[in-house]
Length: 95
Image 1: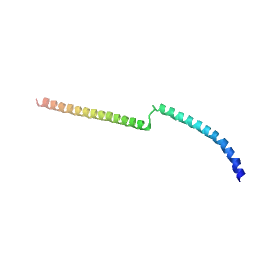
Image 2: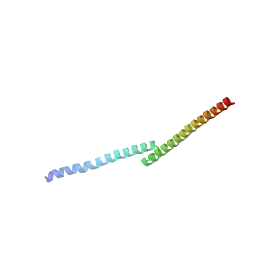
Image 3: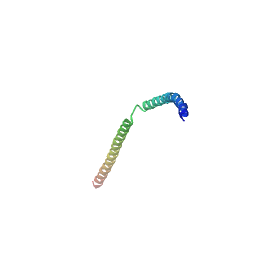
Image 4: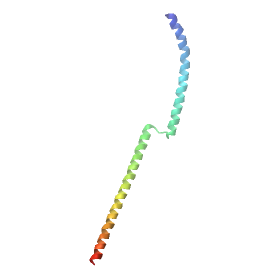
């Protein structure tokens, strides 16, 4: 039994630094890729993207409110025009 342990240990001692070096190199490559991807995403962290999305939704809500208020104003103006036209017609008919 001790002979088997001794024969195994040198292999592990030789292989471990090689595995560590290759794993470390691949990990560094992956880390660089992640950094590049984050730069492509305008360097935004998840919290920043969440805040940007909230700003976009708030802006779109404001635009929607403005459009809706404009539509209501147009309807109100049309209603006023039709009322004034009816009043003028009635006055013309009466006179």
